Image: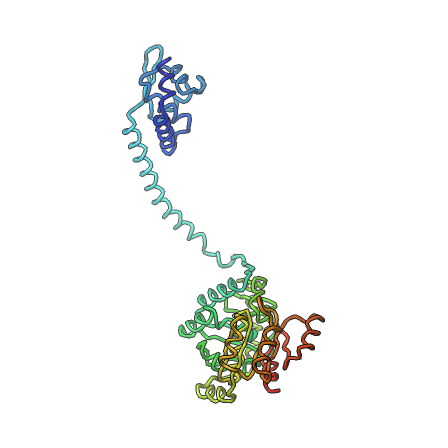
Length: 406
């Protein structure tokens, strides 16, 4: 018994080895106390159940049950003598046998999986008739654009796209643009519909690979992208700013009833819309209408891009954008623009500060303030500084051009 105590209280290295052995044996199908008993049996050699119980510190009745189970699993044998002694079987032989059995099980599983899939495929003959419609809500503008790309990529015949001009312009600066171009190369019929704000922007539409689109009265300011099996739609989109993109959401569904209804709506809008053919030569004439230089200052890059696109499609020869209020003064000094579109709410230096600095350099420059803030305090301050004009977001192309013509 003293010898047994000495073995149990061996150095830390031996204890760690024992724990490792037990962990390994558990992978071969033994419970923790079974693995512990087998390891103890291997160390003690031929022993009585009481000796093994003392060594492992497992209750004696439980030890008897464990030993009998180890015998059934092939891990141990017992003598016919009295008292009965137990001994561990050769571990290498045991583990090899277990591995062989597991391999046989895997082979049987592989064979049976093919049979099962074959049987199951025959049971799915009427699956399409009972398929449950799915509906998903997608939030955040970036995720929405990813979903639109997925829908475009999955379309092989005809696709309706109904978008507000601001959303269509915004998509131009995303991978959606490339997805639409690729779809046209695959001979997918793209039926693009928007309102008259983009009637003159034919070159921009042409960059998407679309040669024909329609101007129509949009049912909402939201998005509607629809093919024969899926619909993506939302009631509205946020303004031109990129700041509220996380608040946007759309519904995506394959419901046959909803798809059918949206297809009917799209067909009606297409049939009643005004068709626009894009010709290459026409755009050069449009771009030569005005020879002006404009500076757009906004801390939101998305807003700068959209504003710049609006100006360029109206023939403004040079449009410079700046998202850094600190650098805006240096840009102004360099290009000396005829007009500046200046956002009010910006970090570090706001639009009122920049307006004052611009007037110090050139009092005759047109400065149009752009803001979504319609509070009484802001309006009062605008009256005090007296800019050339004020545009409130969300703006449109008519407002912008009206300010320049004054």
